[in-house]
Length: 193
Image 1 (cartoon, rainbow, N blue to C red):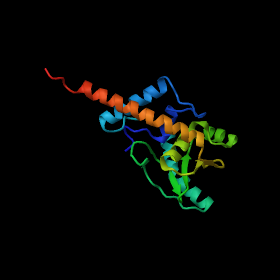
Image 2: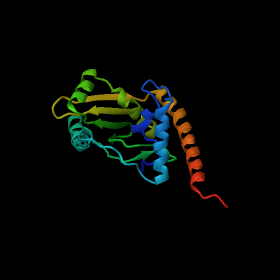
Image 3: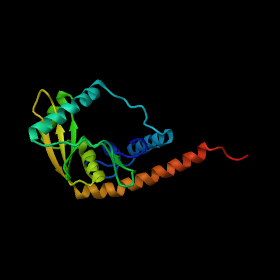
Image 4: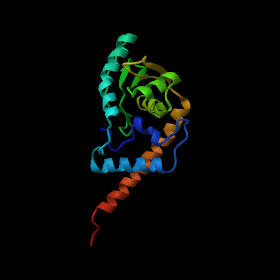
């Protein structure tokens, strides 16, 4: 479902944590990746390290910990899209009608960096605000979970500037992606003799 469309976890390819549209190689490469996915009809092969696999394995444990320690019930919605289905996100959970959940289970040294800073890490600013953009929810909770250390829990409110920049940047990206896809189809189709 994610293939060929921009998703919140990748919005940092399009905007900076300071809400400036990116220019140069990063958004160009992202456009080409999304073009390849759309053309192939599925995802590209992705690199996955041992740390990434460990983080994925701990996610269910982290959700259960969060539910128990905060006295809430988490709904696991799967993949969400905007009404037109052209932009998506994969929340780790939803709490009621007004809050989403993003959980990371990083390596110990990275978790400690997040914990000591005590704020939403810059690496996830675009993802969290992007998830609010896709779902329309007014808030999101970011959790960095560790079995060995206290967990970081940060509640993030919808940022109007972020939403404005995403509302301008994402349609422009989709227009460029559609145009590139049309050009690719013309190149790929045999020309009449």
